[in-house]
Amino acid sequence: MNVIQASAWFPPDSLGGVEVYLNGLVEDLSAIGLNCKVTASRAQDQPTIEHYNAIEVYRYPSQDLDAFRAWLVENKSEIYHQHTLRSGCGLPHLQIAKELGMKTIATIHMPDVSCLRGTMMQGGHSACNGKIDLARCSACLGVSKRVPTWAAKTLSHLPSSLTLSLRDRLRHSSEVRLRQLGTTIATPAQVHQHQRQFDQLVESSDRIVVVCQWLYDAFVLNGVPESKLVLSRHGVLVERKPTERSIHSPIRIGFLGRWQETKGVQMLAQALQLIPNTAVELVIYATHADQHGAANREKVLAIAQSDSRIQIKPPLARSEIMDAIAGFDLLAVPSQWLETGPLVVLESFAVGTPVIGSDLGGIAELVTQGRDGWLVPAKDVKAWANAIAYLSENPGTIAQLRQGIQPVKTRQAVAAEMLKLYQNLKQEY
Image 1 (cartoon, rainbow, N blue to C red):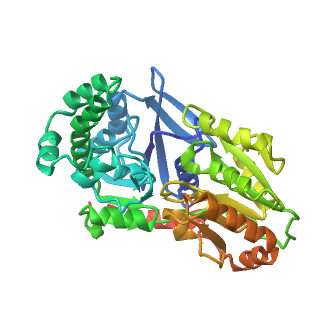
Image 2: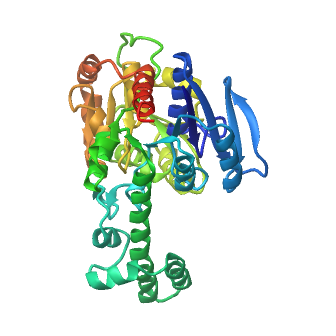
Image 3: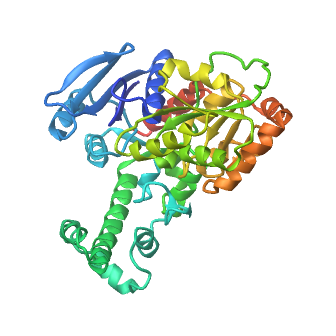
């Protein structure tokens, strides 16, 4: 069976969760005899073919749909499996595969498919159920609740190009009311367009794979038939069994993730400020100090300069992650948004390290409070401080959490699920 795997990103260009998942999936499917062809976009002028870990990758220019179509025609397969919905590999690419007669699968790795804010946090503060609703989504994005529903509906049918142009003209105004007017004009049309794109995604996909329960529930709420949905959680490469080890004194808490605020590393630093006399080490291996994370990095660095318990380390290579996690007493995952994984939780369990994480989304689905980890109200710094203080003062609890960790789902199990999905779709030809 021939399968095309498509993505906006693929190693070595970047190594986020989607890329790690897809690279592992291709390796594991190839190991069981499936012929996978990989295509990924890149900011370049001409298409190229290269290899990454023995995987052949067709790289097409990010904005060149014609090059993508031509390659797809030449390499037409029974199954087309797409892993991103971004400009470089998004809805138009999925639609082309559908037009060419291939069975299409979209795996949803990110919350922005049903959330324009991109975090699934209503108003930026509380978890949302993911239902796309004109009034609620508009209010979440800054439209005053005083705007009548009929007015929002009327605005939603205006061309997005027009409303966005008006918003952009007004957003730099010195008048707050004019800036608010720009948001009010543009947002309903954005929500309407988002709903249309969601519906087109569903129409263009023979199956939609979701990697966590809350995403599954959100798609059902948005009218997607369950017969089209497949829940397939992440898996990890398990290379060794967890080993018995003593708890450090002081306890060592590790963080691996991006510097951006949604990943929550600032919550850990701020929590330590509230418990200055607690014996604990916080080891931060953070990445992507770019425009999205630079300000937050500076905030954390400023706290670390006056707190010797906080250690800022250089980013880890992918091959170093599991060993680093094994050296922690607890892995902290303080995300401030709804994660669909994250893979790092499973990687932590795979080496026997409990997780202290936010009580949101995929983290709350993977971590069981008091059995294999500790769940904390995501945005409550005092709650994080109390949890860290309690666990540092009760190392026996950490040892018990280690004992409660169950075997994790493997990458090979994910590959078996995808193979079954491909076979079922192929029979529908």
